[in-house]
Image (cartoon, rainbow, N blue to C red; front, side):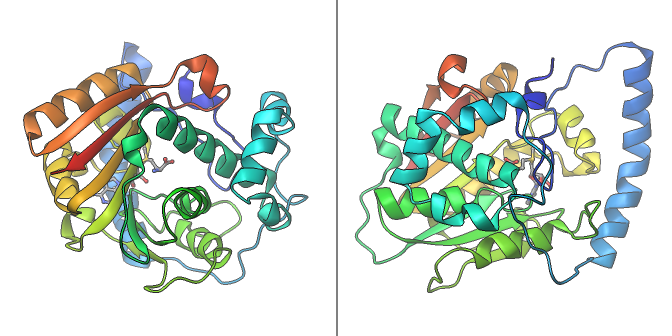
Length: 299
Ligand SMILES: C[S@@+](CC[C@H](N)C(=O)[O-])C[C@H]1O[C@@H](n2cnc3c(N)ncnc32)[C@H](O)[C@@H]1O
């Protein structure tokens, strides 16, 4: 089974497989179809920039959780995280899947911080500036805000997403969902933001940059609906590393072993960052699909 199939599947956007093994005639056909149609549909989405008001979540509205997720959510670890990071107060305003995802991301951040305490940077400023690259619908926003507020300092969040206008079945776009999640967070100055655009064109600098599941292979990128021309792992790493203020931290999370190996090579050849790999044992992650993290510091 694909590792990606194990993520929470009842949020506005199911976790998608990250894989790059194209074998057999069906896969070749799929690849050719995606390579042909992705530029068309991506172009259309980017031109239409679909938005619709009124996106809301509630526990009763989302799809039911998988048995594994329900078990995890009712367990000691999830309860402890909800209490420690004050997430329970948002329960009534989220689908169960989104609530579970916030806790899973907190689980990941908490485990990484335990193994790599340097993720938690010393911070002298009043408010930490945080950028999440490839934010999708910014479903990491709640976990990121809660984690950094509890561990370092309150944060002003910016999520940037190149494909912000993908439309869900309920006729809301990623951007609609992202703005809803940000509306649940305490107001910040500078304000929290969700930017629709290419991070390569973003020039601001941050104390912390997070990058969950960057594309390192054309297979994963095509299956997420993007045109192949957007696969630029080296240029992206160089530019994202440049978004860090001196002493800033970069957290990269990969989903597959082969991606983690490719990520390590990229970091090595980039050369401008002090970095370490943090492997999270599958047993520790329980139900989440990601298991490899890199914490890097800009000297
Ligand atoms: C594998 S998905 C991961 C999404 C999300 N971070 C998560 O953990 O679920 C990678 C995301 O990066 C976005 N992306 C790819 N290239 C980008 C770029 N140059 N600038 C901004 N976002 C980008 C994609 O559209 C996609 O939403």
